[in-house]
Length: 154
Image (cartoon, rainbow, N blue to C red; front, top):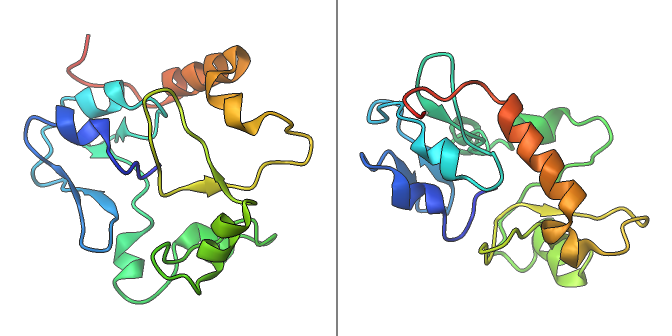
């Protein structure tokens, strides 16, 4: 979710999760000890422990960003359902979507801002309260349980 004030960084004892100068959160696999605490505290279930035993999460394909390419999911999305851009550039497509009110963050309790936005379905009449919707939270909790097992956390 690329939270603006990520709880995972506060709980990473080895400081393996950092924010790059472009604002993207990354996990240094050379530093990560695979304890899994970051995955356990992430309210979105966005972090997990990979089969290699290291924390992992979407980092917008930073190796592609460094080459001037969009994230792979954006490039390969046939329906153009994904947009990527610079939120700090007022002329970018994503900034325009956010300013229009069409693109909205999914904020759970205690989360002030993320760098991932969604365009709610016209059928979603109560987007601002979805983060406290009991059914949504149960579904999110199930997703977290379906992620790869967390090593080192009982």
